[in-house]
Length: 153
View 1 (cartoon, rainbow, N blue to C red):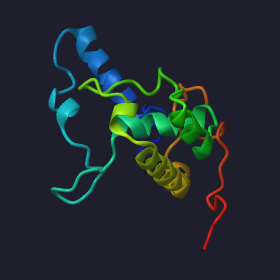
View 2 (view 1 turned 180 degrees about the vertical axis):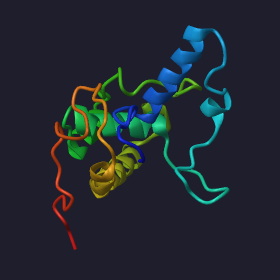
View 3 (view 1 turned 135 degrees about the horizontal axis):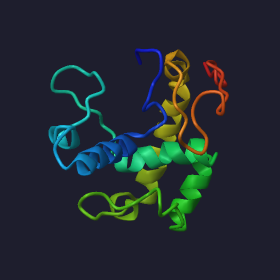
């Protein structure tokens, strides 16, 4: 969140890992330390605390909210009919699909919780430096938001 421009501000965590792996592959050596790919994300939490997110699912959910303007209900309906975006919701490192990992009930809870956090974090995106837009619909001027974001008491 510091600096004059956020070079990776428009990338999901999964995309950052892909870019890092590409850099190592392109240069044929470990420029990005291998621990970067295996360390548990902690998002500046206290020592021993880790992000509770499954980024293989949460990152595509946020992408669907932003890039494709999908509502939580649309995503829940797509899950039910097993028509979620196959390019976004890819199997994890162990080969498990989203349908292997979640039931309709647990997926619905995840979608609603993620959407609530997404709405509550507008202030973070507004306070951040400008980003280099590389996605279909980046945060920033393309995704106009209000910091109140339909405030609910």
